[in-house]
Every structure is written in C-alpha cells, then in structure tokens.
Length: 395
Image (cartoon, rainbow, N blue to C red):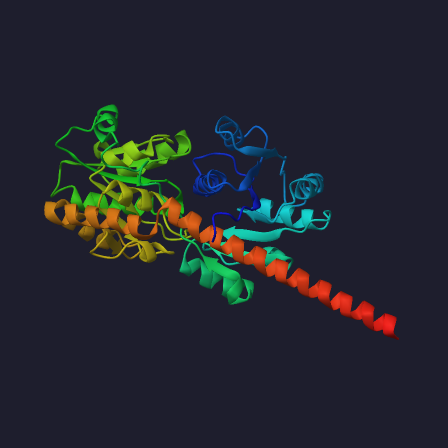
C-alpha cells in the first residue's frame, strides 16, 4: 500500500484493562496506524485504563458506555461519529464492540467497512453466528486454526476470513534491555535457581498440568522454582498454593498477581511455558518470551504450532499431558546448549514474521483492499443507476 493513502479508522473494544491480550493488540494497532499517518481513533469506555492511556499518548478517543450488545444509545452516538469522521473502516475486537458497531451502520448515512477480530478458538454458535452475516467486510483471525473454526462453525465464505498474526515489539521485548535479575530478587529466587514461568492462572491455561509436570522434575532438579503469574485475585493464588502443597512442592511455587513489567518478568525465567488446552489462538506470552530469547514449551492447542517450530524455536507438547511436559522441561533444564539454541531460534522466529510492524503492514493492506472494493462497488452501482435513468428517459 502506498504510504500516501490515509484512512479514517476506528478501533472499537469494550474491554479496558491492559492485562487482556486483546486490549494490548488493539492498542498497538490504533497507535501504530496513527503513527503511520492514518486518522485512527480508539472507541472504548470513558473511565477505562485504555482511555486514560490513549489520552496521555495523544491518540483520539471516542468514549462510549458500550454497556452490552443491545446498547442502542451507544450505537446511535457511534453512528454520528461515522458521519463526523467519514469513517472508512471500523474494526471491532470483541462481541459487544461488534454488535454496537454493526447496529451503528443502520443509524448512519456513512457505512464503513466492518472488520471483526476473532482471537479465541470457541466455535460460533446459534446466538452469535447471525451477526457475522450482516454487513461484514472481513473477519481477522489471529491464526489459521481459528480461521478454520470461524469458516466452518460460522458458515462464512473463506475469502472473507483473513489470518493476521499478532505482533511483538522487539524493541520493548529486548533481552539487552530487560531486567530479569530485579524480578528474581523481588521474588526471592536465588541466581543459581532455575525458574519456570507461566503467565495466566485460568483453568483452561493448564496451570494444574504445569504444576503436576514440574512436580515430576523437581526430584532431579531441586533448584527449580515455578512462578504462576497473573493470578487475578487472592482466591486464585490460594488455589495455586493449595495445589502446590498437595503435590508436595509448596515451597517451590510462587503465585503472583498481575504485572506491568512483562519484559522483566519473562527475562527472569529460564523457561517459559503455556499448557493451554482450550480457548486460545496463539499464546501472547509465548510470543513475548520468544522475543526475549527464552526457551519456551507450549501446548499444541490452538495456533501455537503456527508460532513455535518444535525443536527449532521452542518445544511443543500435547495438551493435558503432564508427563509429556515433564519430559520436555527435563530436556531444556538438562541441556544448556539446547536451551540457548531454542532461545535464539525463538527470537529469530519473532523477527521474521511476528512483529508489530509486520502486523501493521498486513492490516494496512487488508484495509486498503476493502476500501478499494467498496469504492468499485459504489462506482458500479452508480453506473447502473445512471444507465437505468437514461433508459427511462429514452422510453
């Protein structure tokens, strides 16, 4: 796409916390597009963390309640924004955003191309399938695995569903800049210990399988410590601690809350894992750990095999298989040269195809194609209307 082409774009998302991967990716997209000269704005809830940060960063913010999927007042206000900004693309990143952005097209004289992001592998069901067949320009999925699920479960034409991999900023997740030792000191992890990190303690992220696998390895590696990061509240931390005690590794496991210093957290690790067994596209923290140059172990669920090349840029294991994870962990802990090679391979893999800039390139190309197709359809409809009028005059 020519950099002389500049678009009017809205990025819409009701979620407002940067602890959510969809928020991070949406914000990267909005700020990156604005940095490339597009008229990009973030549509989000007024008092959210996203709105506050966007204002600090000088991004345009459209504050809407986005209360629920039938929030017609928000839809009417968004319709006015379509007209005021002559919006060409509205990109919705979650269910409420999709419903409100779609409803707004019925109240506006301007009908932007509606692009919907899909980052989870749950099939489309009877209740949400219908809106994917109304005024949809494109679906963007974060991996091929989700693309197949969307096409099959939503009965959506394949040409409307596009894979655009989420990206990492290698300058932010830079092993030369991250301060892992600071985090290890904070957590009381000695320099000689090996540290295994997984981010997220949701059940479907497989944290129980991770602890079970670690318990198998600790007898041979008594120096191993395990940190489960991003426990959402104390009750989850206590569940992690109870499970660790049950497995007799209670003194080796740390239950950690949300962090805003993820480059440092991942740099503190010797191994980063994600044993998700459902719901995911591609695990964001695995992508970030690879950028930091850490060896990773990921389950084969979702799109993880599209990111991690087994034995080259990380190791893959079957989901819900603690013995398989234990074998992979033993392999990495017991072979320093393998660990270093996987770390280098991971960083190279990110730089080759999973950076923020590459994602921006692909999104810009998609937007340009959709806008061009809409212009051609408009010109064709106008020509047909003119032919009809001339024919009527001749009669």
